[in-house]
Image (cartoon, rainbow, N blue to C red; front, side, top):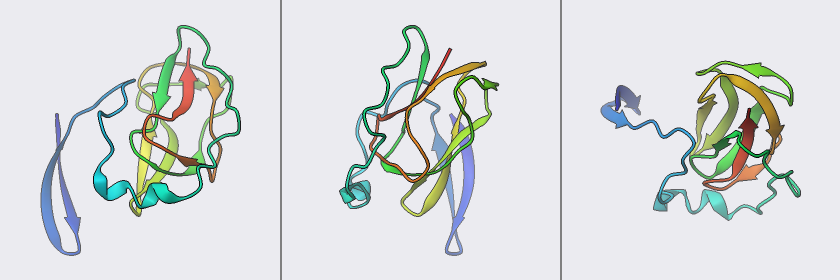
Length: 122
């Protein structure tokens, strides 16, 4: 668990976040449902994930603002792979391990749901 202090509209909140590497959350928050109402324009027919790779999935519904990697790029644990906008906040999708990008299954501007495959790291 990591503890963070966040200020929203002048109110300070202390939050704890649990890092889930390679696992999708059990359920999306109910407040995120309206954001997911947009047409699911996720990557058209994404390629199948290579066998044995580390799958990076979306932790929540939102829109991909930036894709910072391409197939074949070498990546390090903690590197920002993508930026996901959800509930008017920009969320960094971090690399869970060192490796090489085997596939990128989304693109800038795509709407994604919780658990959507974003990329695979070999």
